[in-house]
Amino acid sequence: RAGLRWVYVGIESGTQRLLDLMDKGIRIETVERFIADCREVGIVPQLSFIIGLPGTKPEELQNEIAFLKRYPVDSSSFVLLLGSPMQERPGDFGIRIEDRQVLYATSRGVVHAPRFYFTVEEGLSPAQADAIVEQAGPRPRMRPHLGEVHATLLAGTDFFASAERPPAPPAGSALALQTLSARRQEGASGDGWWFVHMAGCLENEGRLEEAFAIAQAGLQANGRDGAAQEALRLHVGTLLNYGNRPQQALQILSGGGKKQRPSPALRGERMRALFAMNRSADALREAKAMLAAGHEIRWVYYIQGLCYENLGRPAKALKALAKAEQRDWLEPEINEARARCLLALNRPAEAAAEQAKAARKRRYLG
Image 1 (cartoon, rainbow, N blue to C red):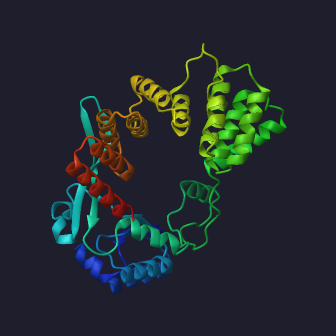
Image 2: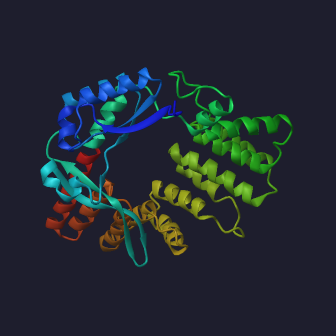
C-alpha cells in the first residue's frame, strides 16, 4: 500500500557459524522467513552476501554456493577494511595482516587505501573462495543494471514485482560497435579515427584478431591524421606484443618518424618489445623517458628493475623494484626479482626474506 516494492538487506552469509563469527545477530531461519514474507506481499528482497569470509571451510563454502543458487543474491568478495573488528583484532579471526594496500604514490610519500592484505591461519583464503564460486557456475542475479531499471520504468512495466528480467543492455563497447558499423555503411569509414575507435571496441570485446585487422587496414588506408596514425600503430603494436611478436611490434611502433614525439603509451609498448628482445639497455632508455615524463607506474618500474638486473646492476634494480612494489603490493614476481638481486649482492638473509614474502603472496592469490 505504501508503494514499497524492493528492499536491500545485508545478510552476508548463509551459514550460521559464519554469521555468529561476525556477530551478525541473526538466524538463518529468520532470513528464510523474511524472504518468504516479502514474496508473499509482493516485495522483492535483495540480499547482500560476502564471499570468502576468513576461515571459511570448504564444506561451508559449498553451503554458501547452494544458498547463492537458491536465492537471488548480490555478492561481493570479503575486503579487510581499516577500523573493522577483523582488522583491529585479527588474531580473534585467524587473520594475519601482511601489508597495507597502496592506493598511489606521490613525491611526498605513499598514500594508502583503507584496506589490508592478509593471509588466513586455516580455511580458504578469499581468492580461493572466489575461484570455487566461479567454478560453481552461474547463479541468479538480483541487482538490475541501471539501464534495465530505466528501460523498464520508462516502459511502465512492473519490474520489481516480477521474477522476470528484461535482457541486460549491451555493453558500451557493443553499442559503440553497432554505431560504428552503421557509420561505415553510411560511408564514414574513411576517417582514421573510425579505425581507431573500431579497433578499440573490438579489443574491449576480446575480438583481438578483428581488432588487429581493422587497425592494420586503418594504417594502410589513411595517413593524413598523425594522431590517428599513432593511435593505430599503438593498437597494432600492442596486439603484436600480446602475440609474442616483439620484432614486428617494434617495427610498427617506431614508424612515426623522428619529428613526432611518441606518446607515453607508445613508449611503454616499445619498452615491452625491446625487453622481450633482450635489448635491456634500449628498454631502459624508454623506461627512463616515461618516468621523466611523470608516468611513475608499477610496470614501468618493474621492467626498469629487470633491465638493471640483466645489465648486472643489482643495486639499481633493487631501488626500481622497491618503487614497483610500493605501487602494487600483490605481485610476487617483484619480490622474486628482488631476491635474485640480493643474492647477487651477497645478502642471502634478505634474499630469503623476499622469497618468503613472495611465497606468502602466492598463497594469498590461491
